[in-house]
Image (cartoon, rainbow, N blue to C red; front, side, top):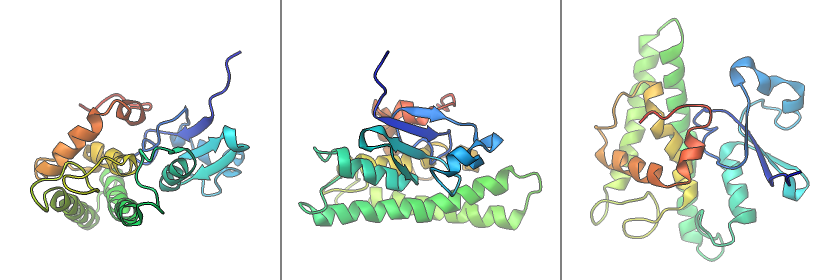
Length: 217
């Protein structure tokens, strides 16, 4: 009998669900499985993703941003996810700054855009509002990736930037699945488009992006 893997991730192919790449258990949220009592015991909010850490007494963490920070805190001994809060406080805060922008800026706006683009009754005002705001926020990333002494390869870090995975995971799913929200092309943001290509080229990206869904490329 094989030894169980240390992490069990309950997820689905949503933008948030693809941010975490560990052992995954895909659940069909279209059938409201995440609202069943067994799931609500782990996350009373009834949303994915949820991580169960079997190596730490089945400790449960919900919210994709919190899961990323949890994994960094307990398992990223080489600081591949980002920077140590004590050793590099300025860089660590910079990472948090862009994580918060992802979850409280682009995330809610793009989610609303996708919702109003997929409901049967179309509301032009709502679609225009969330489309324009999502595009504005993409423009913020475009400026960031093109600012300073030439273009940046990554959002945070000195010079052209480094590649802390916390940032890549926080934005990659949103930008990759932007077509589902109604953004047909990234040509308007060439720096962001190149960033996405770099982020998706990393071997660890494929599994997380394609949980239960064929590639869009």
